[in-house]
Structures are given as structure tokens and as C-alpha cells.
Length: 362
Ligand SMILES: *Cc1c(COP(=O)(O)O)cnc(C)c1O
Image 1 (cartoon, rainbow, N blue to C red):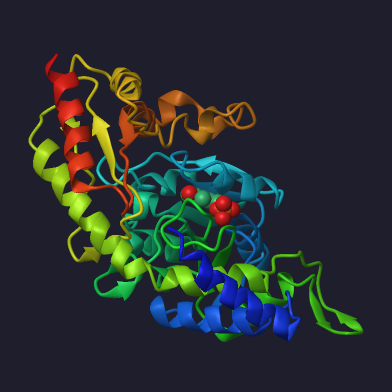
Image 2: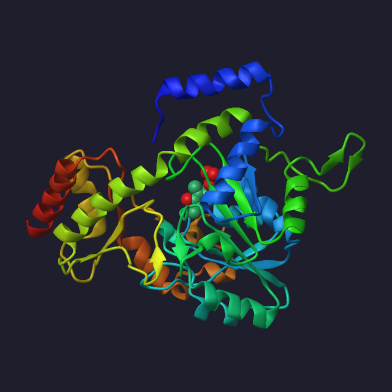
């Protein structure tokens, strides 16, 4: 999603006039305010990427020891724990939402557990109430990786209002983006203050450094791009809704395929359209469909495959053993993200569906 380059050029001219490139300039302030309003998130802090935002969340909430998380996610989620000297403990996922299943968390809690790190996979909200109930019972923090969940709401509430902190990613491949960027939403202004110190080396003023912080700042150039792409999000989402409706109508009644979950009372971000190919119900496997579609120049993604628990850096963990994560194993073998962006014409979506149906029938 790119704004007209002339629009960006005039915003760049404003930055040049101000001669203010980074460290909390006027574009940064304007984007932070605009996103706070858009997401109904008063305590939002912008970052240079989502990964650093999540690393900072662990520091701000003083996490240590072990954190229970999902293996069905992008590499950044468990890596953030490793960068904080925290051991990721993988728990199995829900077979419908593909999110961390709160029912699998409790048996994994030890006296070293400090938090739950869950992911709103493909923008589908986690069981936020279930997660909080278990966290409260055991005195744990709850952090969400909301990299897919920009604009997701649950029961009319922004998904960022649940848990102790939610990370958002504004990478170029996400729905709303700043080329590279991210944010952290926390639940009160005291913690936001701490987050804002942490993302600027822990600096309070010219002669006072409060804590060992990091450089997590978003530049004025990235913020300027964000102010333009934010204006495009509502329209992009509408276009994607049309595409999603075509996919569901054309593919929804095939017994070999599972459509993305519909969650009652939730509005989804529309960041991905992830189907599943039921390998057990179909003579066509996900991998076969993926390969065949490439021959038609249709590029899908096996996202997330492999599981993080199968990475060489994690597979020796006791919680990473395949037989402990049967649902996640199956979902990773079945999932397939279809082409999904506003610039895709209805005609092309129909051609993609034609190809899928042809391959399944043949
Ligand atoms: C993109 C993504 C990230 C990383 O965000 P960056 O802004 O690229 O650092 C983390 N988690 C998930 C689930 C993602 O999709």
C-alpha cells in the first residue's frame, strides 16, 4: 500500500524545512496521536520496528525466567524472549483460531514462569478472557504480539486494550505500515513513561540516564509515510473484504478446505486470508496445491511453516517436542495464505479460485 509519491515528497519537504529528522519530532507526535485515536489506545509508543517494541515490552514489565508462548508464529516472537534471556515454553494452539489455547497453559506453569506471550494470529483475536483468567490465577503478565491485528476489535473494544501490553508491527508487509516501524500499547501512562525512556537509551535528560535502554525510536521520515498510509487503511480494508467474500463464496463449501475462522463479536484486521487444506480429507496436500499454483504464477505462502519449535535453535527445548504440539503440527502442515491485497482485481481473485478448484478436481 503506497501513497502517491508526490504526497510523500511534500511531507519530506516539511521535514527538510524543520531540519528535524528523528528523536520525537512533529511527525512522530502527529502519528502517535493519530494512531492513539484510530486504535483507541491512549498509551501508545511508536518504535522503529515491532521486534524492538516487543523486546522493550519484556523489559518494561520486568519479565524473566520462562514465558509461555505459541510455536505457530513468526520467528520474532520466541526470539524476543531469547534476547531477554528468557526461555520460551511452547504450548499447543486452538484448532479453530490457531491461537495459543489458554487450556494448554496451566500445566506448563512453573515457579520460573513470569508471563504469557500470545499472538493474534492472522488478526483473529485470542481468547483474551481465558488468557487473563489464567494469568490472574497465577500472577502472570500477559503480552500480545499484535503484528497481524491492526484494527482488530473484540466486543467493540480495541484488541490492544487487553493484557498488559500489545505490540504492533508497521513493517511494509503489514496492513498499516511505515516501511519499517512498530508500536507498543500499554495500559497506563506510568508504564508508557517507562517504555518511552527504554526506547531512548533510558535517557531522562542531558545528564541523567535512568536504565539500560535501547534505540527503538521511529524517525520523522517513517512517521511521515505512516501519516499518509493511515489515510488509506479504511479503503484498503473495504477492498480486502470484497476479496475475502469472493474467496469464501467460491471455496467455502469444498470439504477439503477450511476457511479462516469467523469470531462472533469481533472485527478482523483483514491482514491475511489463510485457508487450510485438510490433508486427511483430500488427495491434494497443501504442499501439492502450493507447488501447482506456482505453475500458474499464483504465489501463496506457507505461513507459518515450519513451527518455531522446529527451528534448530529451539528444538532441544523440552516443550518443543513434536508430540506435545499435535494441533500446531497439523495446522503448520495445512495452512496456506492466499494472495490478499486491495490491488487484486475481482477477476484475478476468480482466476485464483478457478485454479484452486481445478487442481482439487484433477
Ligand atoms: C511481522 C511480525 C513480527 C515482527 O515485526 P517487525 O516490525 O518486522 O519487527 C513479529 N511477529 C509477527 C507475528 C509478525 O508477523
